[in-house]
Length: 149
Length: 424
Ligand SMILES: Cc1ncc(COP(=O)(O)O)c(C=O)c1O
View: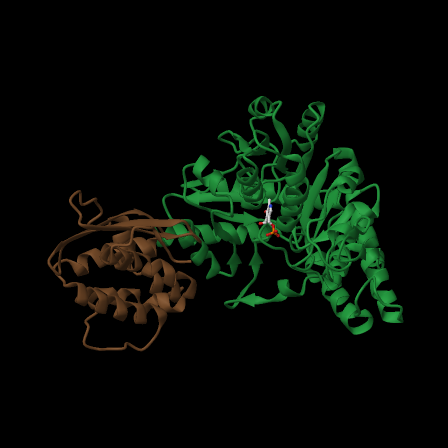
Protein backbone atom coordinates (compact mmCIF):
# COMPACT_ATOMS: atom_id res chain seq x y z
CA UNK A 1 0.00 0.00 0.00
CA UNK A 2 2.27 2.70 -1.31
CA UNK A 3 0.05 5.73 -0.69
CA UNK A 4 -0.23 4.92 3.02
CA UNK A 5 3.53 4.91 3.21
CA UNK A 6 3.54 8.27 1.42
CA UNK A 7 1.58 9.64 4.32
CA UNK A 8 3.17 7.72 7.15
CA UNK A 9 6.80 8.11 6.23
CA UNK A 10 9.34 6.70 8.66
CA UNK A 11 10.51 10.15 9.71
CA UNK A 12 6.94 11.07 10.62
CA UNK A 13 6.40 7.89 12.61
CA UNK A 14 9.70 8.38 14.35
CA UNK A 15 8.83 11.96 15.38
CA UNK A 16 5.43 10.75 16.55
CA UNK A 17 7.07 8.20 18.83
CA UNK A 18 9.77 10.51 20.11
CA UNK A 19 8.65 14.10 19.64
CA UNK A 20 11.39 16.72 19.87
CA UNK A 21 11.11 19.78 22.10
CA UNK A 22 8.19 18.18 23.86
CA UNK A 23 8.25 20.25 27.03
CA UNK A 24 7.02 23.42 28.61
CA UNK A 25 9.06 26.60 28.51
CA UNK A 26 8.38 28.04 31.97
CA UNK A 27 9.62 31.49 30.96
CA UNK A 28 7.81 31.50 27.62
CA UNK A 29 6.98 35.02 26.47
CA UNK A 30 4.49 33.68 23.93
CA UNK A 31 2.19 30.74 24.28
CA UNK A 32 -1.01 29.57 22.60
CA UNK A 33 -3.35 26.62 22.58
CA UNK A 34 -4.64 25.03 19.38
CA UNK A 35 -7.58 22.69 19.15
CA UNK A 36 -9.05 20.56 16.41
CA UNK A 37 -12.61 19.88 17.56
CA UNK A 38 -13.13 17.28 14.86
CA UNK A 39 -10.62 14.81 16.26
CA UNK A 40 -9.85 16.26 19.67
CA UNK A 41 -6.23 17.16 18.89
CA UNK A 42 -4.97 19.74 21.33
CA UNK A 43 -1.53 21.36 21.48
CA UNK A 44 0.15 24.15 23.36
CA UNK A 45 3.04 25.90 21.63
CA UNK A 46 5.57 27.81 23.76
CA UNK A 47 7.95 30.47 22.47
CA UNK A 48 10.82 32.44 23.90
CA UNK A 49 11.84 35.30 21.62
CA UNK A 50 14.99 37.32 21.50
CA UNK A 51 13.80 40.46 19.75
CA UNK A 52 12.55 39.02 16.51
CA UNK A 53 14.42 35.75 16.75
CA UNK A 54 12.92 32.53 18.07
CA UNK A 55 15.42 31.61 20.76
CA UNK A 56 13.47 28.61 22.03
CA UNK A 57 10.30 26.85 20.94
CA UNK A 58 8.49 23.79 22.31
CA UNK A 59 5.12 22.10 22.41
CA UNK A 60 2.96 19.77 24.45
CA UNK A 61 -0.36 18.06 23.91
CA UNK A 62 -2.14 15.16 22.28
CA UNK A 63 -2.86 14.43 18.68
CA UNK A 64 -2.54 12.02 15.79
CA UNK A 65 0.77 10.99 14.25
CA UNK A 66 0.57 13.67 11.57
CA UNK A 67 -0.19 16.54 13.92
CA UNK A 68 2.36 15.45 16.50
CA UNK A 69 5.17 14.87 14.01
CA UNK A 70 4.36 18.18 12.36
CA UNK A 71 4.57 20.00 15.68
CA UNK A 72 7.82 18.25 16.54
CA UNK A 73 9.49 19.04 13.23
CA UNK A 74 8.19 22.59 13.28
CA UNK A 75 9.96 23.24 16.58
CA UNK A 76 13.19 21.79 15.16
CA UNK A 77 13.00 23.90 12.04
CA UNK A 78 12.19 27.18 13.70
CA UNK A 79 14.77 27.47 16.43
CA UNK A 80 16.95 30.43 15.59
CA UNK A 81 14.67 31.70 12.82
CA UNK A 82 13.09 35.16 12.74
CA UNK A 83 9.35 35.69 12.92
CA UNK A 84 9.30 36.59 9.26
CA UNK A 85 11.18 33.45 8.30
CA UNK A 86 8.74 31.40 10.35
CA UNK A 87 5.76 32.96 8.57
CA UNK A 88 7.33 32.30 5.18
CA UNK A 89 8.10 28.71 6.05
CA UNK A 90 4.50 28.17 7.15
CA UNK A 91 3.31 29.57 3.82
CA UNK A 92 5.53 27.16 1.94
CA UNK A 93 4.49 24.24 4.18
CA UNK A 94 0.84 25.11 3.70
CA UNK A 95 1.27 25.03 -0.07
CA UNK A 96 2.96 21.65 0.24
CA UNK A 97 0.27 19.94 2.30
CA UNK A 98 -2.59 21.43 0.31
CA UNK A 99 -0.97 20.43 -2.96
CA UNK A 100 -0.56 23.98 -4.29
CA UNK A 101 2.40 25.09 -6.31
CA UNK A 102 4.69 27.01 -3.96
CA UNK A 103 4.11 30.76 -4.00
CA UNK A 104 7.82 31.23 -3.66
CA UNK A 105 10.74 28.88 -4.20
CA UNK A 106 13.08 30.96 -2.10
CA UNK A 107 12.06 29.23 1.13
CA UNK A 108 13.69 25.87 1.75
CA UNK A 109 11.33 23.24 3.09
CA UNK A 110 14.17 21.04 4.25
CA UNK A 111 12.96 17.90 5.94
CA UNK A 112 9.39 19.21 6.12
CA UNK A 113 9.17 17.78 2.59
CA UNK A 114 8.20 14.44 4.16
CA UNK A 115 4.72 15.89 4.60
CA UNK A 116 4.10 16.02 0.84
CA UNK A 117 1.92 12.88 1.14
CA UNK A 118 -0.64 14.84 3.16
CA UNK A 119 -1.91 16.55 0.02
CA UNK A 120 -3.40 13.20 -1.05
CA UNK A 121 -5.41 13.10 2.18
CA UNK A 122 -7.40 16.35 2.30
CA UNK A 123 -9.03 15.58 5.65
CA UNK A 124 -5.59 15.39 7.23
CA UNK A 125 -4.45 18.87 6.18
CA UNK A 126 -5.81 20.29 9.42
CA UNK A 127 -3.76 17.79 11.38
CA UNK A 128 -0.56 18.83 9.61
CA UNK A 129 -1.18 22.55 10.07
CA UNK A 130 -2.58 22.62 13.62
CA UNK A 131 0.78 23.31 15.29
CA UNK A 132 1.57 26.00 12.74
CA UNK A 133 -1.72 27.77 13.25
CA UNK A 134 -1.09 27.58 16.98
CA UNK A 135 2.36 29.06 16.46
CA UNK A 136 0.82 31.95 14.54
CA UNK A 137 -1.63 32.56 17.35
CA UNK A 138 1.21 32.52 19.87
CA UNK A 139 3.19 35.05 17.84
CA UNK A 140 0.13 37.27 17.53
CA UNK A 141 -0.41 37.00 21.28
CA UNK A 142 -3.91 35.54 21.00
CA UNK A 143 -5.41 34.69 24.36
CA UNK A 144 -8.24 32.37 23.31
CA UNK A 145 -7.50 28.82 22.18
CA UNK A 146 -7.55 28.76 18.40
CA UNK A 147 -9.62 26.20 16.61
CA UNK A 148 -9.27 24.66 13.18
CA UNK A 149 -13.03 24.59 12.65
CA UNK B 1 -47.09 -1.34 4.44
CA UNK B 2 -46.45 0.11 0.99
CA UNK B 3 -46.96 -2.12 -2.01
CA UNK B 4 -43.25 -2.23 -2.66
CA UNK B 5 -42.52 -3.39 0.85
CA UNK B 6 -45.25 -5.99 0.70
CA UNK B 7 -43.83 -7.29 -2.55
CA UNK B 8 -40.39 -7.37 -1.02
CA UNK B 9 -41.74 -9.26 1.95
CA UNK B 10 -43.40 -11.76 -0.34
CA UNK B 11 -40.24 -12.27 -2.34
CA UNK B 12 -38.28 -12.70 0.81
CA UNK B 13 -40.88 -15.01 2.26
CA UNK B 14 -39.37 -18.42 1.57
CA UNK B 15 -35.91 -17.49 2.83
CA UNK B 16 -37.19 -16.05 6.05
CA UNK B 17 -39.96 -18.51 6.70
CA UNK B 18 -37.42 -20.80 8.30
CA UNK B 19 -36.18 -18.08 10.55
CA UNK B 20 -33.02 -17.55 8.54
CA UNK B 21 -31.54 -14.20 7.92
CA UNK B 22 -30.23 -13.98 4.38
CA UNK B 23 -27.76 -11.15 4.65
CA UNK B 24 -26.63 -11.42 1.02
CA UNK B 25 -30.17 -10.86 -0.11
CA UNK B 26 -30.43 -7.84 2.15
CA UNK B 27 -27.14 -6.46 0.86
CA UNK B 28 -28.50 -6.68 -2.68
CA UNK B 29 -31.24 -4.23 -1.64
CA UNK B 30 -28.66 -1.49 -0.93
CA UNK B 31 -27.19 -0.06 -4.16
CA UNK B 32 -24.29 1.71 -2.43
CA UNK B 33 -23.01 -1.56 -0.97
CA UNK B 34 -22.16 -2.73 -4.48
CA UNK B 35 -19.70 0.16 -4.85
CA UNK B 36 -15.95 -0.06 -4.67
CA UNK B 37 -14.03 2.47 -2.60
CA UNK B 38 -10.41 3.06 -3.60
CA UNK B 39 -10.66 -0.10 -5.69
CA UNK B 40 -11.80 -2.20 -2.73
CA UNK B 41 -15.29 -3.41 -1.84
CA UNK B 42 -16.93 -0.93 0.52
CA UNK B 43 -16.99 -2.12 4.13
CA UNK B 44 -19.39 0.32 5.70
CA UNK B 45 -19.08 0.30 9.47
CA UNK B 46 -20.20 3.85 10.23
CA UNK B 47 -23.87 3.13 10.66
CA UNK B 48 -24.21 4.96 13.96
CA UNK B 49 -23.36 8.17 12.08
CA UNK B 50 -25.78 7.43 9.29
CA UNK B 51 -27.14 4.33 7.60
CA UNK B 52 -27.23 3.41 3.92
CA UNK B 53 -30.53 3.42 2.04
CA UNK B 54 -32.29 0.45 0.48
CA UNK B 55 -33.68 0.64 -3.05
CA UNK B 56 -37.20 0.75 -1.57
CA UNK B 57 -36.46 4.11 0.07
CA UNK B 58 -34.73 5.60 -2.96
CA UNK B 59 -37.63 4.45 -5.15
CA UNK B 60 -40.20 5.91 -2.76
CA UNK B 61 -38.54 9.32 -3.02
CA UNK B 62 -38.40 9.19 -6.80
CA UNK B 63 -41.96 7.93 -7.05
CA UNK B 64 -43.19 10.72 -4.81
CA UNK B 65 -41.55 13.43 -6.91
CA UNK B 66 -42.58 11.83 -10.19
CA UNK B 67 -46.15 11.02 -9.29
CA UNK B 68 -47.44 12.80 -6.21
CA UNK B 69 -45.48 15.98 -5.55
CA UNK B 70 -47.66 18.73 -4.16
CA UNK B 71 -48.09 20.64 -0.92
CA UNK B 72 -50.02 18.96 1.85
CA UNK B 73 -53.10 19.93 3.85
CA UNK B 74 -53.95 22.89 1.66
CA UNK B 75 -55.12 22.05 -1.84
CA UNK B 76 -58.39 20.87 -3.19
CA UNK B 77 -56.74 19.41 -6.25
CA UNK B 78 -55.89 15.80 -6.94
CA UNK B 79 -52.15 15.92 -6.30
CA UNK B 80 -52.48 17.75 -3.04
CA UNK B 81 -54.95 15.20 -1.84
CA UNK B 82 -52.65 12.40 -2.88
CA UNK B 83 -49.56 13.95 -1.27
CA UNK B 84 -51.53 14.53 1.93
CA UNK B 85 -52.71 10.96 1.93
CA UNK B 86 -49.18 9.62 1.50
CA UNK B 87 -47.78 11.98 4.13
CA UNK B 88 -50.45 11.02 6.65
CA UNK B 89 -49.95 7.39 5.68
CA UNK B 90 -46.30 7.82 6.64
CA UNK B 91 -47.42 9.11 10.01
CA UNK B 92 -49.53 6.00 10.56
CA UNK B 93 -46.57 3.84 9.55
CA UNK B 94 -44.43 5.58 12.18
CA UNK B 95 -47.24 5.14 14.69
CA UNK B 96 -47.38 1.41 14.07
CA UNK B 97 -43.61 1.18 14.10
CA UNK B 98 -43.45 2.62 17.62
CA UNK B 99 -46.79 1.17 18.64
CA UNK B 100 -48.04 4.62 19.60
CA UNK B 101 -51.69 4.81 20.67
CA UNK B 102 -52.62 7.39 18.04
CA UNK B 103 -51.17 8.89 14.85
CA UNK B 104 -51.49 12.39 16.30
CA UNK B 105 -48.82 11.44 18.85
CA UNK B 106 -46.33 11.29 15.98
CA UNK B 107 -44.77 14.68 15.26
CA UNK B 108 -42.54 14.91 12.21
CA UNK B 109 -39.36 16.80 12.97
CA UNK B 110 -35.97 17.22 11.30
CA UNK B 111 -34.34 14.55 13.42
CA UNK B 112 -33.47 13.57 16.96
CA UNK B 113 -31.83 16.91 17.64
CA UNK B 114 -34.89 18.91 16.65
CA UNK B 115 -37.16 16.53 18.55
CA UNK B 116 -35.25 17.09 21.79
CA UNK B 117 -35.09 20.82 21.21
CA UNK B 118 -38.84 20.88 20.65
CA UNK B 119 -39.45 19.21 24.01
CA UNK B 120 -36.91 21.45 25.76
CA UNK B 121 -38.52 24.59 24.33
CA UNK B 122 -42.13 23.68 24.63
CA UNK B 123 -42.45 21.30 27.57
CA UNK B 124 -39.25 22.47 29.25
CA UNK B 125 -39.97 26.17 29.24
CA UNK B 126 -43.48 25.72 30.58
CA UNK B 127 -42.65 23.12 33.25
CA UNK B 128 -39.15 23.84 34.46
CA UNK B 129 -38.32 26.82 36.62
CA UNK B 130 -35.71 28.25 38.96
CA UNK B 131 -34.29 25.63 41.33
CA UNK B 132 -35.68 22.69 39.33
CA UNK B 133 -33.51 19.93 37.93
CA UNK B 134 -33.23 18.00 34.69
CA UNK B 135 -31.59 14.60 35.00
CA UNK B 136 -29.65 12.97 32.18
CA UNK B 137 -26.82 10.40 32.12
CA UNK B 138 -23.09 10.53 31.56
CA UNK B 139 -23.38 8.80 28.19
CA UNK B 140 -25.63 11.22 26.31
CA UNK B 141 -25.03 12.54 22.82
CA UNK B 142 -24.48 16.32 22.80
CA UNK B 143 -28.00 16.69 21.42
CA UNK B 144 -29.40 15.32 24.67
CA UNK B 145 -27.17 17.60 26.76
CA UNK B 146 -26.99 21.02 25.17
CA UNK B 147 -30.74 21.75 24.79
CA UNK B 148 -31.20 21.02 28.51
CA UNK B 149 -28.17 23.08 29.40
CA UNK B 150 -29.60 26.03 27.46
CA UNK B 151 -32.97 25.58 29.14
CA UNK B 152 -31.45 25.32 32.61
CA UNK B 153 -29.35 28.41 32.04
CA UNK B 154 -32.37 30.40 30.92
CA UNK B 155 -34.53 29.23 33.83
CA UNK B 156 -32.01 29.08 36.64
CA UNK B 157 -32.45 25.32 36.81
CA UNK B 158 -29.72 22.68 37.22
CA UNK B 159 -28.68 19.93 34.85
CA UNK B 160 -27.54 16.73 36.56
CA UNK B 161 -25.87 13.75 34.92
CA UNK B 162 -25.91 10.27 36.46
CA UNK B 163 -22.47 8.66 36.27
CA UNK B 164 -21.46 5.56 34.31
CA UNK B 165 -19.06 2.79 35.38
CA UNK B 166 -15.86 1.54 33.74
CA UNK B 167 -17.83 -0.75 31.44
CA UNK B 168 -19.88 2.20 30.23
CA UNK B 169 -23.05 1.20 32.07
CA UNK B 170 -25.29 3.59 33.91
CA UNK B 171 -24.84 3.23 37.67
CA UNK B 172 -28.48 2.72 38.50
CA UNK B 173 -28.19 3.42 42.23
CA UNK B 174 -26.55 6.78 41.50
CA UNK B 175 -29.25 7.59 39.02
CA UNK B 176 -31.90 6.73 41.60
CA UNK B 177 -30.17 8.98 44.14
CA UNK B 178 -30.04 11.91 41.72
CA UNK B 179 -33.71 11.51 40.86
CA UNK B 180 -34.89 13.82 43.62
CA UNK B 181 -37.81 16.02 44.59
CA UNK B 182 -36.57 18.80 42.32
CA UNK B 183 -36.25 16.61 39.21
CA UNK B 184 -38.78 17.74 36.60
CA UNK B 185 -37.64 15.69 33.62
CA UNK B 186 -35.39 12.75 32.78
CA UNK B 187 -33.62 12.52 29.41
CA UNK B 188 -31.88 9.27 28.62
CA UNK B 189 -30.47 7.57 25.58
CA UNK B 190 -31.91 4.16 24.76
CA UNK B 191 -28.61 2.98 23.28
CA UNK B 192 -25.35 4.93 23.55
CA UNK B 193 -23.83 5.95 20.22
CA UNK B 194 -20.29 6.09 21.64
CA UNK B 195 -20.35 2.90 23.73
CA UNK B 196 -23.21 0.75 22.45
CA UNK B 197 -24.62 0.38 25.96
CA UNK B 198 -28.31 -0.52 26.03
CA UNK B 199 -29.91 1.28 28.95
CA UNK B 200 -32.59 -0.33 31.11
CA UNK B 201 -35.09 2.30 30.00
CA UNK B 202 -38.15 0.39 31.17
CA UNK B 203 -36.79 0.25 34.71
CA UNK B 204 -35.72 3.89 34.59
CA UNK B 205 -39.12 5.02 33.39
CA UNK B 206 -40.83 3.01 36.11
CA UNK B 207 -38.70 4.60 38.78
CA UNK B 208 -39.14 8.11 37.38
CA UNK B 209 -42.91 7.68 37.09
CA UNK B 210 -43.10 6.51 40.68
CA UNK B 211 -41.87 10.01 41.49
CA UNK B 212 -44.08 11.67 38.89
CA UNK B 213 -41.19 12.62 36.61
CA UNK B 214 -41.71 12.30 32.85
CA UNK B 215 -39.03 10.67 30.71
CA UNK B 216 -37.72 11.49 27.24
CA UNK B 217 -35.92 8.63 25.51
CA UNK B 218 -33.37 9.36 22.77
CA UNK B 219 -33.96 6.43 20.45
CA UNK B 220 -31.59 7.48 17.64
CA UNK B 221 -29.38 4.40 18.06
CA UNK B 222 -32.12 2.01 19.12
CA UNK B 223 -34.67 1.94 16.31
CA UNK B 224 -32.32 0.52 13.64
CA UNK B 225 -31.43 -2.42 15.87
CA UNK B 226 -34.43 -3.56 17.88
CA UNK B 227 -38.19 -3.22 18.08
CA UNK B 228 -39.51 -0.38 20.19
CA UNK B 229 -42.94 -0.22 21.80
CA UNK B 230 -43.56 3.16 23.38
CA UNK B 231 -46.67 1.96 25.17
CA UNK B 232 -44.86 -0.99 26.72
CA UNK B 233 -42.00 1.30 27.72
CA UNK B 234 -44.53 3.87 28.94
CA UNK B 235 -42.08 6.64 28.00
CA UNK B 236 -43.47 10.16 27.74
CA UNK B 237 -41.38 11.22 24.75
CA UNK B 238 -39.39 9.15 22.26
CA UNK B 239 -37.27 10.63 19.48
CA UNK B 240 -35.36 9.22 16.53
CA UNK B 241 -33.78 10.27 13.24
CA UNK B 242 -34.86 8.86 9.88
CA UNK B 243 -31.37 8.80 8.41
CA UNK B 244 -30.05 6.40 11.05
CA UNK B 245 -32.85 3.94 10.34
CA UNK B 246 -32.28 3.62 6.56
CA UNK B 247 -34.49 6.61 5.71
CA UNK B 248 -33.59 10.02 4.25
CA UNK B 249 -31.84 12.84 6.07
CA UNK B 250 -33.93 15.79 7.21
CA UNK B 251 -36.76 13.80 8.77
CA UNK B 252 -37.29 12.32 12.20
CA UNK B 253 -40.00 11.51 14.67
CA UNK B 254 -40.96 12.86 18.03
CA UNK B 255 -43.46 10.68 19.82
CA UNK B 256 -45.23 12.23 22.80
CA UNK B 257 -48.13 11.09 24.92
CA UNK B 258 -51.32 12.86 23.84
CA UNK B 259 -52.06 14.40 27.21
CA UNK B 260 -48.59 15.96 27.42
CA UNK B 261 -48.56 17.20 23.84
CA UNK B 262 -52.06 18.67 24.18
CA UNK B 263 -50.98 20.72 27.15
CA UNK B 264 -47.75 21.96 25.58
CA UNK B 265 -47.45 25.32 23.83
CA UNK B 266 -46.36 25.32 20.15
CA UNK B 267 -42.68 25.22 19.28
CA UNK B 268 -42.65 27.34 16.13
CA UNK B 269 -45.28 29.60 14.66
CA UNK B 270 -46.40 29.73 11.05
CA UNK B 271 -48.61 28.06 8.52
CA UNK B 272 -50.23 24.67 9.15
CA UNK B 273 -49.99 25.01 12.93
CA UNK B 274 -52.95 27.37 13.17
CA UNK B 275 -56.70 27.04 13.04
CA UNK B 276 -57.43 30.76 12.68
CA UNK B 277 -55.34 33.89 12.69
CA UNK B 278 -56.27 37.51 13.29
CA UNK B 279 -53.90 40.22 14.35
CA UNK B 280 -55.40 40.02 17.81
CA UNK B 281 -55.37 36.30 18.31
CA UNK B 282 -54.33 32.98 16.85
CA UNK B 283 -56.06 29.73 17.59
CA UNK B 284 -53.61 26.86 17.31
CA UNK B 285 -54.29 23.76 15.32
CA UNK B 286 -54.88 20.42 16.99
CA UNK B 287 -52.29 17.66 17.25
CA UNK B 288 -50.02 16.86 15.55
CA UNK B 289 -50.16 20.02 13.38
CA UNK B 290 -49.72 22.36 16.32
CA UNK B 291 -46.08 21.27 16.28
CA UNK B 292 -45.57 21.16 12.53
CA UNK B 293 -45.32 24.77 11.43
CA UNK B 294 -44.64 25.35 7.76
CA UNK B 295 -44.40 22.95 4.86
CA UNK B 296 -43.04 19.69 6.24
CA UNK B 297 -40.48 17.37 4.70
CA UNK B 298 -43.13 15.48 2.75
CA UNK B 299 -40.82 13.31 0.68
CA UNK B 300 -38.70 12.66 3.75
CA UNK B 301 -41.67 11.34 5.69
CA UNK B 302 -42.66 9.12 2.78
CA UNK B 303 -39.09 7.86 2.43
CA UNK B 304 -38.92 7.21 6.15
CA UNK B 305 -42.13 5.20 6.01
CA UNK B 306 -40.62 3.10 3.21
CA UNK B 307 -37.57 2.49 5.42
CA UNK B 308 -39.69 1.50 8.41
CA UNK B 309 -41.74 -0.81 6.20
CA UNK B 310 -38.55 -2.30 4.87
CA UNK B 311 -37.11 -3.28 8.25
CA UNK B 312 -40.49 -4.28 9.62
CA UNK B 313 -40.84 -6.57 6.61
CA UNK B 314 -37.58 -8.27 7.52
CA UNK B 315 -38.46 -8.34 11.21
CA UNK B 316 -36.74 -6.35 13.93
CA UNK B 317 -36.35 -9.35 16.18
CA UNK B 318 -34.51 -11.18 13.42
CA UNK B 319 -32.36 -8.11 12.79
CA UNK B 320 -31.56 -7.83 16.51
CA UNK B 321 -30.60 -11.50 16.78
CA UNK B 322 -28.44 -11.37 13.66
CA UNK B 323 -26.63 -8.19 14.69
CA UNK B 324 -26.08 -9.53 18.18
CA UNK B 325 -24.29 -12.49 16.64
CA UNK B 326 -22.12 -10.26 14.44
CA UNK B 327 -21.32 -7.94 17.34
CA UNK B 328 -20.26 -10.87 19.53
CA UNK B 329 -18.07 -12.17 16.71
CA UNK B 330 -16.55 -8.71 16.24
CA UNK B 331 -16.00 -8.22 19.97
CA UNK B 332 -14.19 -11.54 20.25
CA UNK B 333 -12.10 -10.99 17.12
CA UNK B 334 -11.13 -7.40 17.80
CA UNK B 335 -10.39 -7.79 21.50
CA UNK B 336 -8.13 -10.76 20.70
CA UNK B 337 -5.77 -8.46 18.77
CA UNK B 338 -2.77 -7.54 20.95
CA UNK B 339 -2.83 -3.91 22.07
CA UNK B 340 -6.52 -3.38 21.40
CA UNK B 341 -8.66 -1.91 24.15
CA UNK B 342 -12.43 -1.85 23.89
CA UNK B 343 -14.21 1.23 25.22
CA UNK B 344 -17.71 0.21 26.25
CA UNK B 345 -18.01 -3.32 27.56
CA UNK B 346 -21.51 -3.25 28.97
CA UNK B 347 -23.33 -6.54 29.44
CA UNK B 348 -26.20 -5.24 27.31
CA UNK B 349 -24.80 -3.83 24.08
CA UNK B 350 -25.95 -3.24 20.54
CA UNK B 351 -24.44 -2.12 17.30
CA UNK B 352 -21.26 -0.37 18.43
CA UNK B 353 -17.63 -1.38 18.86
CA UNK B 354 -15.49 1.50 20.14
CA UNK B 355 -11.79 0.73 20.46
CA UNK B 356 -8.24 1.97 20.77
CA UNK B 357 -5.06 0.38 19.41
CA UNK B 358 -2.05 0.89 21.67
CA UNK B 359 -1.30 4.58 21.64
CA UNK B 360 -2.14 5.01 17.97
CA UNK B 361 -4.42 8.00 17.57
CA UNK B 362 -7.91 7.03 16.29
CA UNK B 363 -7.55 9.50 13.44
CA UNK B 364 -4.59 7.52 12.11
CA UNK B 365 -6.57 4.30 12.51
CA UNK B 366 -9.39 5.84 10.48
CA UNK B 367 -7.12 6.90 7.63
CA UNK B 368 -5.40 3.52 7.38
CA UNK B 369 -8.71 1.63 7.41
CA UNK B 370 -10.14 4.01 4.82
CA UNK B 371 -7.31 3.10 2.48
CA UNK B 372 -8.70 -0.42 2.59
CA UNK B 373 -12.26 0.67 1.84
CA UNK B 374 -13.32 0.35 5.47
CA UNK B 375 -15.43 3.26 6.73
CA UNK B 376 -15.43 3.79 10.49
CA UNK B 377 -15.82 6.91 12.58
CA UNK B 378 -13.06 8.37 14.68
CA UNK B 379 -13.32 11.15 17.21
CA UNK B 380 -15.46 11.91 20.23
CA UNK B 381 -18.73 10.92 18.50
CA UNK B 382 -20.49 14.04 19.82
CA UNK B 383 -20.08 12.60 23.30
CA UNK B 384 -17.22 14.54 24.82
CA UNK B 385 -18.29 13.78 28.42
CA UNK B 386 -17.94 10.05 27.63
CA UNK B 387 -14.40 10.60 26.37
CA UNK B 388 -13.61 12.59 29.48
CA UNK B 389 -15.01 9.81 31.66
CA UNK B 390 -12.57 7.35 30.09
CA UNK B 391 -9.83 9.96 29.99
CA UNK B 392 -9.25 9.59 26.25
CA UNK B 393 -9.49 12.21 23.50
CA UNK B 394 -11.25 9.96 21.00
CA UNK B 395 -12.00 6.42 19.93
CA UNK B 396 -12.24 4.50 16.69
CA UNK B 397 -15.79 3.26 16.31
CA UNK B 398 -17.11 0.49 14.10
CA UNK B 399 -20.91 0.46 14.12
CA UNK B 400 -23.13 -2.18 12.62
CA UNK B 401 -26.32 -2.44 10.62
CA UNK B 402 -28.37 -5.36 9.41
CA UNK B 403 -26.33 -5.62 6.19
CA UNK B 404 -22.92 -6.10 7.79
CA UNK B 405 -21.31 -9.53 7.63
CA UNK B 406 -18.73 -11.51 9.56
CA UNK B 407 -16.52 -11.31 6.46
CA UNK B 408 -16.56 -7.54 6.86
CA UNK B 409 -15.50 -7.97 10.47
CA UNK B 410 -12.63 -10.12 9.19
CA UNK B 411 -11.69 -7.25 6.86
CA UNK B 412 -11.76 -4.89 9.85
CA UNK B 413 -9.47 -7.23 11.77
CA UNK B 414 -7.05 -7.35 8.82
CA UNK B 415 -7.25 -3.55 8.65
CA UNK B 416 -6.34 -3.25 12.30
CA UNK B 417 -3.42 -5.55 11.57
CA UNK B 418 -2.29 -3.07 8.94
CA UNK B 419 -2.51 -0.24 11.48
CA UNK B 420 -0.30 -2.19 13.86
CA UNK B 421 2.14 -2.86 11.03
CA UNK B 422 2.46 0.82 10.12
CA UNK B 423 2.84 1.82 13.77
CA UNK B 424 4.96 -1.17 14.78
C1 LIG C 1 -27.73 8.80 20.53
C2 LIG C 1 -27.88 9.92 19.56
N1 LIG C 1 -28.67 10.95 19.85
C3 LIG C 1 -28.84 11.96 19.00
C4 LIG C 1 -28.21 12.03 17.79
C5 LIG C 1 -28.43 13.20 16.89
O1 LIG C 1 -29.09 12.82 15.76
P1 LIG C 1 -29.33 13.84 14.57
O2 LIG C 1 -28.00 14.45 14.27
O3 LIG C 1 -29.85 13.01 13.46
O4 LIG C 1 -30.32 14.86 15.04
C6 LIG C 1 -27.35 10.98 17.44
C7 LIG C 1 -26.63 11.04 16.17
O5 LIG C 1 -25.44 11.05 16.07
C8 LIG C 1 -27.19 9.92 18.34
O6 LIG C 1 -26.37 8.91 18.03
